[in-house]
Length: 267
View 1 (cartoon, rainbow, N blue to C red):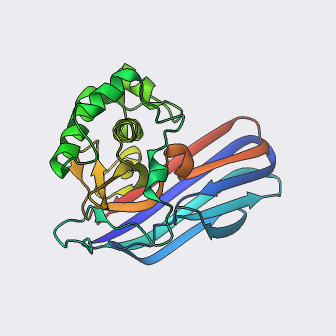
View 2 (cartoon, helix red, strand yellow):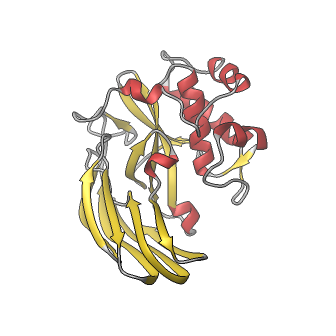
View 3 (cartoon, rainbow, N blue to C red):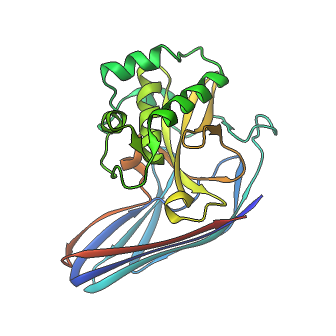
């Protein structure tokens, strides 16, 4: 399947900025299962790319001239292919040769801590010897408990907070899944990407989880209660949202900020 992406982000400021730096995780991962046919990432400023410790491509955008707006543009086409482990299973991934040990993804972060109730919940359902179907059952349990509710949480909401509220979006579903899996002894990592066929920007930009089980990664979409397939395009993996948020940065000056985002992901 070929997926077409058009992702536009635009910031307006009430005054001139003196300096701004943005960290962008907006380039697809180079891994089996997806092949970049064309990809153009542009922005208002000097841009440099490098690989991080997890094999993601990270772009740094620096603006040193006074500006009252900054735009970031992504236009590309990616071919999504079958898993090299099993052509019928798009959701299986081997550990990359330059990736850190999977045990790195057992460590909780500030966003993925589990409380005692969550630990008991996880250990009653999964373990390092679980089967694939038990991961899907856990995803369904999480989605049942956290009703998909845009606006109920924000980017700093922790897994414990979302668990208590019983509401959230894909990012919260992913953080709770990470907290539960890690507390039960299963390495798990956050995945940031796109989901083709969704009309709204908030749903076309998506998040899910890779879980290490039986010697490979299994990619689970908690929000949709399923393993991923060819509609899912992977941008970056990390320990949580903060580690691989698509756009993150700081600036000097500018005053109040207004952000506009338009995303189209289709096949």
